[in-house]
Image (cartoon, rainbow, N blue to C red; front, side, top):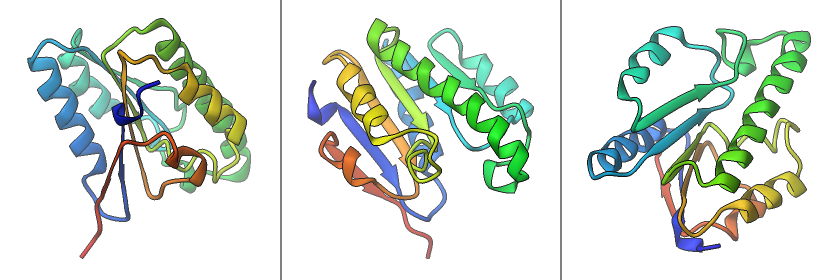
Length: 160
């Protein structure tokens, strides 16, 4: 695994997803392919419709069933959505193992450990599944110590 190919956009400011998406679009314009998997943000049909116009170079996936962000769901809805998010995590693992793209963006991924949707072992397995040919980019509020050893670059975005 090539450490410098894992990049993180984190912090409490807005723009982490936009920065990652901009990177994907720029890379696609230079011949790369990107897959974006979004976690915890809910099913946003209008965004999905717009982003699908970027295919086939940039593909966007959300495994969410509910339209609301994860934190806005009831406890029962959160349990159901956790299973959907877990499917997204398993899809990310498959993408890394098969090398389906040049860039894999895991949007709002950093909090999955905090919410107990994945374990530290899951995180290790995912990071070790990455080949040297695939660049991984993660976004979220803060970096977990487990992930830190795999990261080459961290960009912190703060609200003023």
